[in-house]
Structure formats: C-alpha cells, structure tokens
Length: 149
Image (cartoon, rainbow, N blue to C red):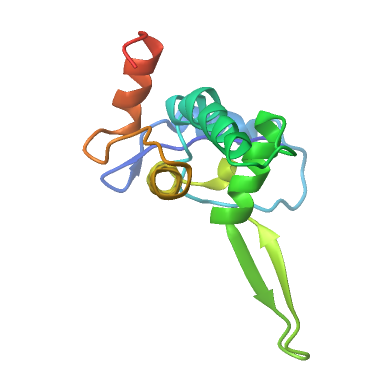
C-alpha cells in the first residue's frame, strides 16, 4: 500500500508529479482510493505529548495513589480511556460497547483540544498546570526543547 500527500491550491493539484508517480507503477486492476484531510497531529505536538505531558501526568497519578500506572504507555492508555472513549450502540439490542480513539488519528486542532482537556483535568484533579491556553502547543514545545520550561 502506498500513501501520498496531495497539495491542493485554488482547486488545482500543486504536486502533479507526486500524484503521477503514485500511480505509474500500479499493475492493471481495480484499486480503492481514500481521500482525507492530511492535517494529522504534528511531530511537535506528538513530541510534547510524549516528552512532557505523559511523564507529568504519570507522576501526578502515582502521587495520588494510582501505583499501577508504571509506564508512559500506561498513562497514555489511561488518558485515551478518559478523553477519547466512544460508545457504540447496537441498533438491534441496545447493547453498548466502548472503544478507545487513537491519538494518531487526531487532527492538529483535535490534538490541541485533547492536550487542553488533559491540562484542565490535571489542574482540577492532580493539582498542577502544564500549559496555558494563550500559548500554542508548538510554542510550548519550542520552550521545552530549549530548556526554558
């Protein structure tokens, strides 16, 4: 499977060569093409989340008694359960199951909202703040990367 980013400007494909190259090596046959917005979370957002947010939350959870939260991955799973949980209903039986969303599928805007939700929760339940709503996640990451926070 191949994946490419197509840039559109004023209704025109900007990177036509990339698009052409994505199709040139395909054998004859039928293919499915899925088009979706490519504004997934940024590398800076992801680095800030894994390098700053998760370690702080992990320590905060352990401080208030959640000793089974031992790793960053445990913390990540707990936060997904708290903030990205969806309920799916069975139309025939009314039974409901819960599934967890994926941070990897969040857009840059949704990922910022996810981190802000975590920040608000931390302020209320863990007693500390790690971000300010007036700063963008990218700016906070830059400050963290340079050792200023």
